[in-house]
Length: 350
Ligand SMILES: C[S@@+](CC[C@H](N)C(=O)[O-])C[C@H]1O[C@@H](n2cnc3c(N)ncnc32)[C@H](O)[C@@H]1O
Image 1 (tube, rainbow, N blue to C red):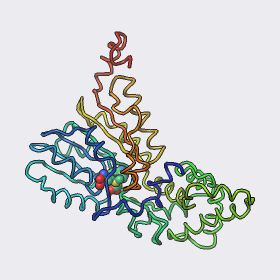
Image 2 (image 1 turned 30 degrees about the vertical axis):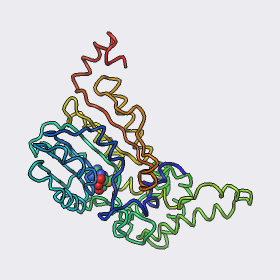
Image 3 (image 1 turned 90 degrees about the vertical axis):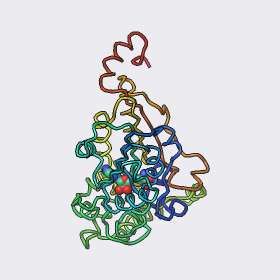
């Protein structure tokens, strides 16, 4: 099983990864160790979700600190507010929870009168309560509208994409965002089906993808049965659902914009930590952090991604594909200084 098809994929989120509020945060101790939040600091949580990380970080900013939490899902912003209130951060730490895409973080900070922050956290993807709600259309395990929007103000749903893209575009989307090797076969099935009737539900789409797989398996030789004795197969619909979710929510484009804006958000010495669940995302984070490190604009705090320990992997399946990378921002001006220092064997030489 590939990392992407594990916890992040719709079928991977199941028993054992939820608490009473529906989401257990991943890699919490590791995030705390890297961000090292201090009294009086300002932390920007780009994906506050159900405030799992927030309720651990915010109290450490007291007294005098500030916690800014963003989420594009208004329902999660409301839940995060409740949970943060319940740990009584209130008087000692100012908490601002705002419905916004993290691509607009600079504008949000401007509105709040915040110049730079000491820490940035982005825990990408979706929360378990979103996956568990059939009305969101994210899961192939329960029937619901084929929606997939995390931000309800977006106008294009997964059903719109399925109805509007031509066969090649659909196949490319499934291959690019889902690494789906049977993308062409699935795209053909979708197009054949929608000629007869529109595909509006998760159940209809999942059945089509499973049928596309079954027609291949039906033709495979008996000897291939042996291979089935290996690790448990993922549901054939896993990659198609993941690809559509990434496309509907423009997840890779948003991450790219966030990475490009980090330097405008952080004060020199501040730390950014990103948790990703998908190899494309992790590659983007790795490249960005590596680039800053080489240019002397950042100091990589994780040469290799931090992953969950066995105990967490067992208790929270979602953690199995989580990869955490962090960087200390040294500042845009450090690049010039580092260039000079590099010639003398300083930062630039690392
Ligand atoms: C993995 S959950 C975060 C969980 C959170 N760290 C916690 O401990 O409860 C990801 C959250 O990010 C939100 N999200 C995804 N993309 C976003 C974006 N571009 N801007 C803001 N929020 C986003 C989702 O709606 C979801 O609530």
